[in-house]
Length: 352
Image (cartoon, helix red, strand yellow):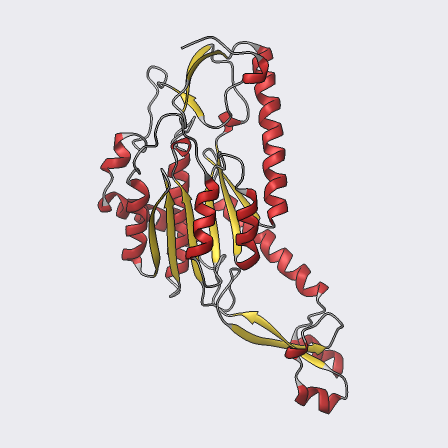
């Protein structure tokens, strides 16, 4: 242990956590040895609880009865419209063009069949939480909800789990048993990394580029506390697939309260420090560095061309997913309008 370092060597944000919880504070049985002791029965309990508290409220939002917000593997004919200079000539409907004497193209929508992949960052930094939940628990709840919603419509989900590296790959399947197997795999802590090493998220993303061949929806579930270099493989993955960055965070990673002298440990490297959180100057420096990291992370995700869903340990999962789906629906309408796609019923009314 040592005292607070100089300003330019403040602890790495997000990877730190109190080395021991305050006296009397109750912690959930999710981290440490409890993770390794989790079994299929606990996964069943988690899924049953989420079925009543979350899934019933979200069912139909991410994937309705007629059209999904996620990317499928097939196409359905949705409409016909006049040809524009940027259109693919292979989509021209020659029969309609001959009748109307004006070139028309077919407009397609994705069908409801889809395959989803979860790229799961289970490195030590996700075993952190300043409140009642760890980031790993938030990730498990999110995966349980999305996997159940997707597979109950006959679609498939797969996963790649990263701990000390890409530890395991679960091929896409459907069914409740597969979802339970996925949750159990998440709860089994991967082998710990050697001291001094940090997460390399780029290894997971690069491996996904080789494993996920068919066009899919890919959820990258991580706190994005990683060695630099993950931005390029993330952008490459987004060129082929529909990628959603599901970012896990905790309020303590953004702003420190006045807790006095607090021993903290870097979960990635094992380095320990004793910091004086009653020092207002230190808290300001911490908040400034955290704000800069937030801005850099959002810019990197934006440049990669991926959608972002932020899940906080003190937030409500239903509200977060509903806000996200609302934004996707609005964007779909805007893109459809920009492309000049007019519903068939409206075209008939205009013709009449």
